[in-house]
Image (cartoon, rainbow, N blue to C red; front, side):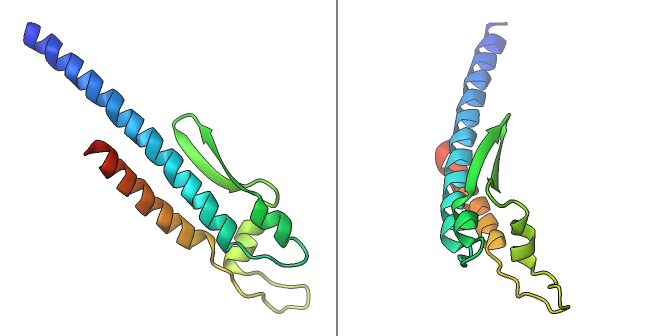
Length: 116
């Protein structure tokens, strides 16, 4: 009976350490992603200043979301390109996909480092 209680305490303590490592990794990855998106987002004379400055992150429950708070409707259009009024298409400016890949790598590295 005493062994079970000791084991339970040890597992609870490990669970708290893992949760703390995951939370720290989330914050680190979110900050790195926001920084990368701010640096790599397009800047043009119309909406660019508001667009690239609008990247932020928000923690909701156990997840962290990175989003553009000033021009959220432009993210898909700029990432994938879109049709113009005259029928031509704009070129795609991929800036979210590379940042997402970097965020995943940063998150994984931070968790491995936090648990070792």
